[in-house]
Image 1: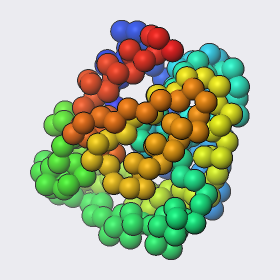
Image 2: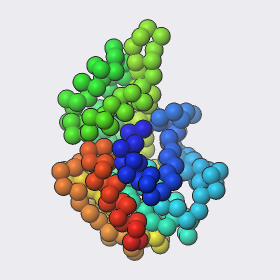
Image 3: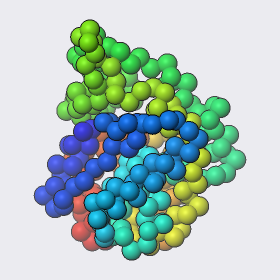
Image 4: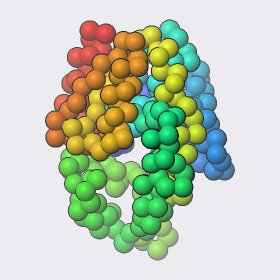
Amino acid sequence: HVYRALIRRLVPHYRVWTIDLRGQGDSESGKLTETHWQSMAQDVVGVMDQLGLGEFYGVGHSGGGALLALHAATHPGQVKALALLEPVTIPQEPAFAQRLSSDNHPLVERTLRRRVVWESRQQLFAAYQGKDAFANWKEEVLWDYVNYGTTNLPDGRITLKCTAEVEAHVFATTMSLDIFSQTNTIACPVLVLRGELTDPPLAIVAERLAQRIPNGSLVTVPGTSHFLPMEKPEQIGQMIVEYFATA
C-alpha cells in the first residue's frame, strides 16, 4: 500500500502486480532463520511461476529491488527491463561486511527499540512525521503506511503488522545472500535510482551495481533519500515509465 501513489503512475501503461514479502504486509513470516533472504528469493520465484509471468517489467525498492535483480540474473529472458530503487545488493567485501554484519548493523538495534503499540493511528502518524526517515514522505503515503501497516488490538490500540523482530532480522541477514556477484549476468536494461541524500554505503552500492550490470544506468534523484518512492512517487513513476518505453 505504501507504493500506491507510485503505482497510480504505472497503471495507465501496465498491469501491476505487487508482493508482500514474507513477514511484511499481510504475509506471514514463518520461523526466522539465517536463510530468510534465500526463502524470500524462492517466494519471488514461486509467485512468478504461480502467476505465469514472463517477459515482465520489474520495479523493486530496497530489498525488493535486490530480489528482483537476483531473479533477473537467474532467470534469463524472463525480465524485459528493471527499475531498481536503492536496491540493497551489498557486495560481499570486508568494507561492507564490517559495517553491515549482523552484530553491528546500524538498523538492527534501532529497530528492536521501535515502539510497536500506539494509542491511535493519528498518534502514530504525528510521531512518524517527526522522524527524520519519514519527514519527507508525502502525507498520503505516510497515511497509507499508518492505515494499512497496522492492526487493531482488542483494547482499541493499534500495533504494527511487521514486527520489530522480523524487520530487524531482515536487516541483520542482508548479507547472507550474495546477490551482487551475480548481477553481471543480468541481460536486460536496468535503471538504478538512488537518492541524493542517501548515506553510504547504499549510495556506493547503487553506483557499483549500475556499473556492474552490462546494460545498467544510474540516476541520482535530487532531494530524496533511501525512501525516494515515498517522497516523490509521481516523479519516480514518470522516470520509470519513460525508461521502460525506450528499454
